Amino acid sequence: MRVYGKKPVFVFDPADRSNRLPNDPAYTTARRRWELCPPSLQKLFTQAFGAGLNEPARRVTEGEWQGLFLQLKDGAVACPSCQAENLWEPALISLSCWHCKHSIALPPRLVVSHAAGKHNVLLVKGARLRRRHFEPHAADGETEIGQVVQHPTDPQILGHQEPDRGAMARLVAGRDAERICATKVRAVERRD
Image (cartoon, rainbow, N blue to C red; front, side, top):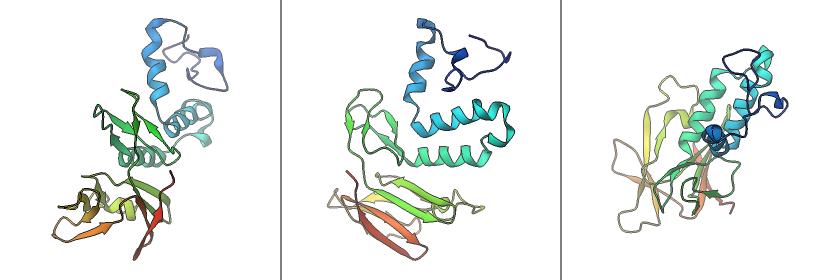
């Protein structure tokens, strides 16, 4: 294995296996952490440190990194068994805890469609809805515009509560909500 930037080759580069991690217990942690990375993160790392290493046109942009990390942040869900934080992404139809291996029931999600593409937010209690979810290039993108809350008498019902108002808009339990445009939201069936 070559390190310290001499003829750099990403150790997990699928096209160039010349710098693979050795079969040595000292490298178990690196291998295990790579396996725990969501597929979208592995793909971006592979692009950045594989083809992008020597081909500037194929390098990952700052915006691509930010978009991915924000999506992963909005897909974080705690394991109900051990409370370990797990990262869900839209390509995953099921999720098992990385720590205790228990299956995690995926909560409903908000799918926001805008000119920059789609963004998913898992609707877990306490999730914060931010301006960037609806306007990805807004200067005040981290401004909170609401929070996911449980109904006071029915924990199966989630709602959206604006920070400066007591009113709660109901989100349909057992369904995903999809924001179609700036003024319309509709519920769509969950894909289980």
